Image 1 (cartoon, rainbow, N blue to C red):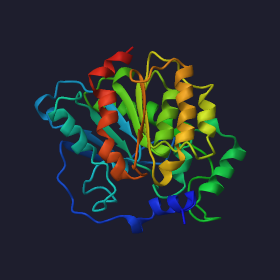
Image 2: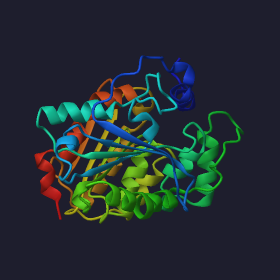
Image 3: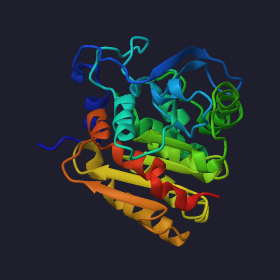
Image 4: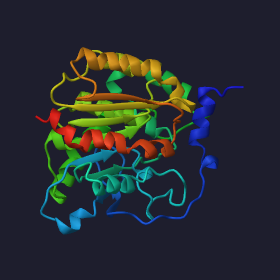
Length: 314
């Protein structure tokens, strides 16, 4: 019997499905901020990754990639998930691309969830202006792992404050502390599932701050496509941003294709050209997992940081 969407979500979120593996050596270097302060959202860890090339070129300035679900980006000893097979291994992917001279070097800022397996993730990643209070309470009920489960932090949707945190608190700190290129053509957001939703929302709300986004396995189905519908009237015109979408065909990703087609229509409506400043890719057999995202992360990284990324610069 086929699994229901709720059963699939429960499986993906269950720690019982996570394999233990040895800690790998990191490429590049990481600074781990254990409790990054904020007046807008709860403090949480933030990892800042610098490529190996930074040591020999400390005076160079670099693009910055802000990645959601930061606790799963790098496999290092400070991670609460250390030893589990849930990591994207972003350091390995970017280093391989750099060694092959396929992308520009970049700094990665990995923003952790405060409580990554609790409802606060939904509250911070669900595009706030796309839903009414009635919509939100229905979504909370439909996407709970267990009926009537009390989940800390999701009573009030908070994605607007989360984006304000990125733009008005975290980004100024990163730009002051590290040698960054600060313009929108060198500032990107990347995420998967609901992290992809908030990445797209960041483009809609702050197109002059974030010049590009990679939205992997975007969970358009949450709220039955309500976010893609909202974007039909709230998406920036082409010319300043680059957007990458993708999805697989297995587990939760099997639900996404009709909604992604709806979003593709939005991209065409606002003047984006597929293969130039926008791309959508379908990966046959790929599922909704960090392993799948790791295996194809090189594609959106090349889209955002490769030579062709110059086409959408302001």
